[in-house]
Length: 76
Image (tube, rainbow, N blue to C red):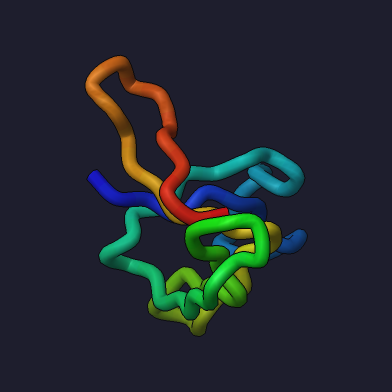
């Protein structure tokens, strides 16, 4: 399962997950990537698409949940 890892701003989605690192399903997100100077790719911007509006994801990274249940990063 591909996910976007990051945090969301205060008082969004009506929950108390502010400051927690969330793993949001990538199929409910929109993001842009660009080439990284180190190697590979980096996520420039990411948004969680929600019924009340798009929510900006702070410090996003793209990856997937591996067999061990851990996040495996593909793009920072």
